Image (cartoon, rainbow, N blue to C red):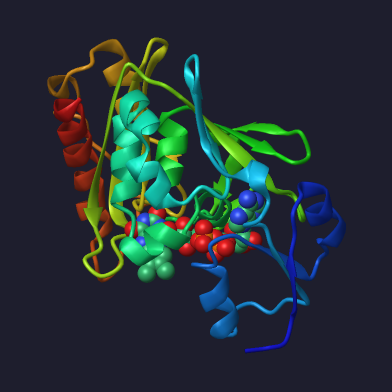
Length: 262
Ligand SMILES: Cc1cc2nc3c(=O)[nH]c(=O)nc-3n(C[C@H](O)[C@H](O)[C@H](O)COP(=O)(O)OP(=O)(O)OC[C@H]3O[C@@H](n4cnc5c(N)ncnc54)[C@H](O)[C@@H]3O)c2cc1C
């Protein structure tokens, strides 16, 4: 492993001061540590944000569940407040990786990393999430996720928390990679007063809103209404786990399963 300076910091101002073109934030380290060890990333400064108190915790107020960026997946999965307000979000967190990953990995790290197969990005899209940063930006999820491992975060910009809109009904279904538990395809369906949003992960190079399903479910929230929808495989991933055609079929099949489970 290459040498680097390790900084454990206590507030977000220090994070901004220390960050540079050659630094990286460290949350749970579930992605950062293996990338440094494998030589995929090399940094002068590693800025550990775990001790910044205000970045951790869960708060429900009105129609919003606010989750601090360094909150671990296991905390979301076991939170009574999340289970009551958005049970599907607790279920999603409880299905990430294995107990070790869930006890180290963080929601902010997952979202900032934007792995094309990660679970939380699908929840962010379906639950109309707002990503709050230390630059006082409030970014809607649809604008936040830009492409494979790419978001609209600027260099040195820190996610502080994520606001999820509490839906009327919701469910998350995924076809798991049997080794990592990442989503080969994951579909999050959320019915809001204003309409239904279907967030899809694992199928394309970046999470997205499957509008053909969202529009139909907004008019008629029943699995019958999407049963005959054709999902195009044209931009879908194709690999040893599933072909593009298989993934396209799974998007519809999992959406039907999620609607029926709501
Ligand atoms: C074996 C294994 C299995 C996994 N299975 C799944 C799975 O089934 N589903 C799934 O969704 N994920 C899965 N993951 C991913 C995991 O859940 C973590 O969320 C992910 O690896 C990010 O890790 P982390 O939170 O520890 O962040 P880190 O590794 O510390 O950071 C990741 C990236 O995010 C940046 N970052 C971290 N926090 C912030 C912040 N607050 N603001 C701005 N940037 C920030 C870091 O600088 C870095 O670039 C798996 C990981 C492993 C190792």
